[in-house]
Length: 202
Image 1: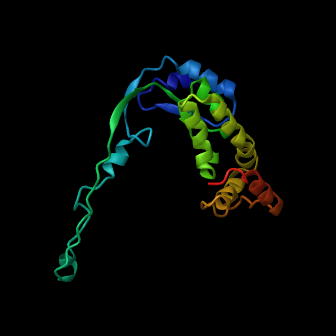
Image 2: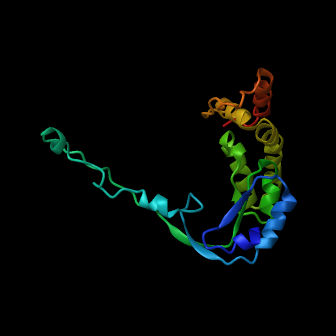
Image 3: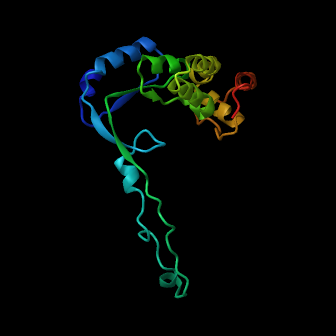
């Protein structure tokens, strides 16, 4: 089914959060023959959507003269709009992992990248695995992977949304309270999360 959908012009990839490397490998193999297409990318983001480009206002479009509103002489003007620098790139069907515990293995198997829940509370630690892999430093990448695998599996995979929210709060980001009917993590679980993240601070 995935191989069939990979041929659809509006479907460019899939995120697999199962943590099952053999499933990701199977998906990569099944979609290897999918047609390649040209996409717009930026130096920072992997892709730029049409909606992102359309949302950028032209100077003055959304501003009204203060004089028109109050009869005064002051005029509100739009700040200058910096254009998004883009380029095009030809890509095949993109397979991404959603599991921090197999990030390196998935990249080595041919995954295009990752969308990790664990990156919400430890973005730099997750990025370090990717950057070491891109630099072909597999020993460093493996060391960085080992550092996040257990905490990622426990916090995201087992403690879930409430655990991840506390991890975000602890690591200097905003997590907040889990919405009903989810319950907050217990005091013991909070202490466990903080211990798991002791060496993964941002």
